[in-house]
Length: 61
Image (cartoon, rainbow, N blue to C red; front, top):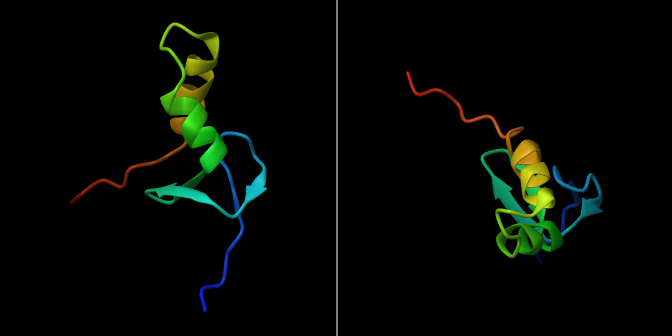
């Protein structure tokens, strides 16, 4: 049986079970949907970009 784990979304800071993990950071389904449906001219788009910059991509050596 799959156990649902709770994660904190890096966009809305809420604890959720459903979403995606990018590198090591969690984005809930609601925020993911809002991100992909937000126009680049919308002020909220820049907020999403700022929050997503928290994702640190490890350097390959």
